[in-house]
Length: 192
Image (cartoon, rainbow, N blue to C red; front, side):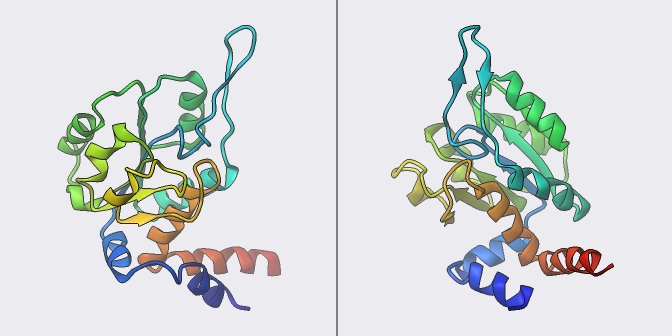
């Protein structure tokens, strides 16, 4: 099976409205707990925090940025572990301990030439609703709270921490005709 057939089958459940919204995206922002992670937090006896991230989510950030799609995070918690991960992935920006995420997004957009309809946001909880109801493409993981899902354009079949960020990023790239060439580039590298 060729890459085009695989990608078509993988995204066969996505509505035309979501594809149209995805084509306009210039900035992908994500929540962290419950999106990049499964929402769990582990503390050891010394109060050191541990989180588990999905490496598939991280791999695509470089390719989004190469396709002129900025990447950021706005999270309600402050965590050095999350700061380290955002820095490692070279997010364009990341803000921690933010209780009014929509206000922070407004401040961010004031410094860029990007409109709300050009922003995608992935969130899973109450604190994300103000942004989810305003952006061009609102996405929730499949395990988001039931009362959040009605307010998004797309509910991923994947849970938080299980690749929802990657699936959304791939969807955006594919809507712009950039995913299949990326896949082909890696196939050709294997042929060398």
